[in-house]
Length: 252
Image 1 (cartoon, one colour):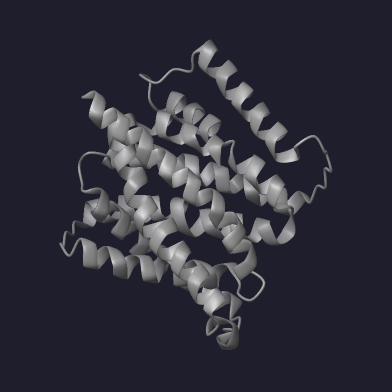
Image 2 (image 1 turned 120 degrees about the vertical axis):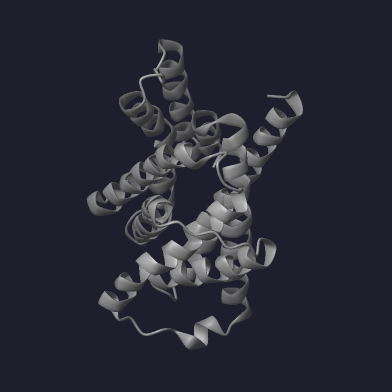
């Protein structure tokens, strides 16, 4: 691959983690007025509309749709429900640390399901060093460890879901447009999120939704955090591969 393509992959991955690092704070604020499922559905709906405008091309295959559905289940529905619910139950610092285990989990899964992917000793040491660095940065010299078993388990589940998504994305990367993959993920994210809304039956806080703060927050999560970043990340995976792209999660 050309050096320019590789450099573009790194820049796209860096852009994603910078944006996703801020979405923790935006989501935390929105969760004061909306449920995790409501935030998720509004986010996916707006992102889907934007991606249709940017890439208005139809493609459908029953065999492939099953893969897109599975990818969306892990990358969208289960990931965001786990992460957003965890943010309501435990500290943001706990969530950010546990979500940063996704690169390690990705490499473990790749080595299990793909024989050509092996974890080298140097790579393992690098993972552990990077993870230790994340812990030091988050605590910033002041360790106030507050554990919430359910919240922390959900945060770890979010990391596992993201790793599984990366494993599935490896199969589709390069076969389809990044815009198409991202749009499919948003569509199936809405589809798989509907049963959650139906079960919860939580009333929508229309007064909060009408505020400029909520509209700006949801717009940011949907248009930048989802539509733009998913396209950028999928493009980065095409250039760098899942392993290298996921390493940028440590920057969150």
